[in-house]
Image 1 (cartoon, rainbow, N blue to C red):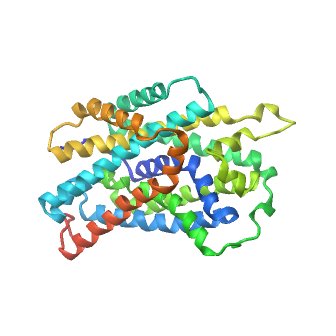
Image 2 (cartoon, rainbow, N blue to C red):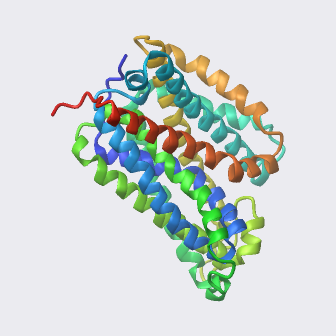
Length: 367
């Protein structure tokens, strides 16, 4: 089956940036600072190079099969049964990221804004919005994400500009105090999040101007690098690496620490941050949920993905409710397990498919 929506390479880039920023800006500063301390900003640079390698691998594989998704051509590369197994791994990954987003969303809302509201309420609201967008199709989600990303980036720049006067350079010294080991360890989480841009493996068949995808994908990595570097430098420079590592949501705390005596109206920007972040989380959830449902329809060889939307969301919500017992467990998972899972699927499996397709000279691309 095939979703008939068409998007441009630019819209795919917007997708790639939106889905990473929505969650990375929350956890990356604390997780990276925990390992790399004051050298966290160097970890982000290393992660950027690894992210570029991951997205280049994904684009190289997708270009060999321009009219199919990874779920469709995995059996062609590996054989029917192994290919179906690999396709299922990608499917599980899409839904896995989706229920992680649901749990993460409810955790922040309950811990920072509405502690007396049951988490299931937040999950249900976000899920219903994602279901509605998924029924609309790919083009609807793209239009929504373009607007949201513009506002998210503008808000991040505003927050950084408002705190820049309070950033202390000495908090980044001494550089390389503990050598490269902690820096490399700190680069793994952001490197994993960069790898989420490989969702392109599902979007590629629907892109009109495929010749621009390499350029726009690297531009997505560059934008993400700048955004991540801003929040890491902001968090560490504002409160120091030790405190930044202790915060569950350093970017959120950054917005709360804004103080301008001359313009008090610009203080406490956490409400604005929350509003924009909710929109970003919706885009991320919708993107991965849509990729999962579309891939499931392709995996099952059914004509339309829409009948699978409600059952799939029900299962994903059930997984989200029971996956983590508390926010501390979620935070530990975000730093120790989640990035490695992303790397395994988006890089290890993807490069295995690319190498196998190359060795077997399998491609549907016209010469």
